[in-house]
Image 1 (cartoon, rainbow, N blue to C red):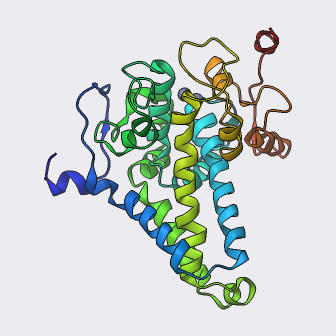
Image 2 (image 1 turned 135 degrees about the vertical axis):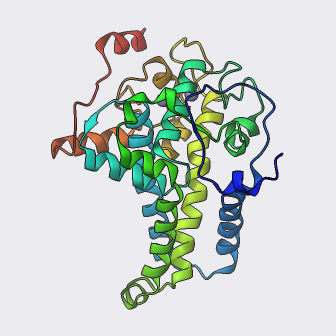
Length: 304
Ligand SMILES: [Zn+2]
Ligand SMILES: [Zn+2]
């Protein structure tokens, strides 16, 4: 582990190189906020008074951000499964970035590599090649996973606003945390929500952010280990309804690995995929368009 402070406080690196599998070390300094958010969320749950509006706030904060992670970080930036305007593209990326899962370009680059090397030695988060804990959280904390591999995302490099937010990925996180605290301190919040700024910070940011980490991470860990395999893909991806429930449709991961280009991951009507339903609604008011459907040959294959 290097003790160069400069290396740790500089923005996360960007590189045109490809990652080289090697012994990885945890970036403890950079991961301090990630660990502190967990500790603070646990303290908040046990030490601060709870009121029902807090739960409503937590569900809202989780739902909005989970939707932007699945719709924008995953289905848009990683797979380009629909089109949208430059403004909506930025807003989707900004809100998703407030989840503390690094920037949109970092996320898309790593995810594209995951699809290309799923469950092989080159896959950064395979529970098949390494441990469950590795695939769930440990890989995210290493220096190996830290750079944004620009070669993977040539299509996004022409947008300076995306590159800016990717470099300074803490800005949306601090904006949400600070915004929650300040809003909670207002008279309006005190009258309508019976909660203080600290409670707003806890239930609007800390608790749902921890839930978002582990919800998203469960796709990499649980959905490559437990569930049904409808399609015989070259990896160990699974369809897992519980993961789909907490990730708004991402748990149909075997469907997704078989045909990643579709905006829809629940290929059947009864497969819970609210991210798709929301995008479909947004397409009705032209906020997004050109939603890529599941082709008939894929449906036919699924029926076999
Ligand atoms: Zn996968
Ligand atoms: Zn994907």
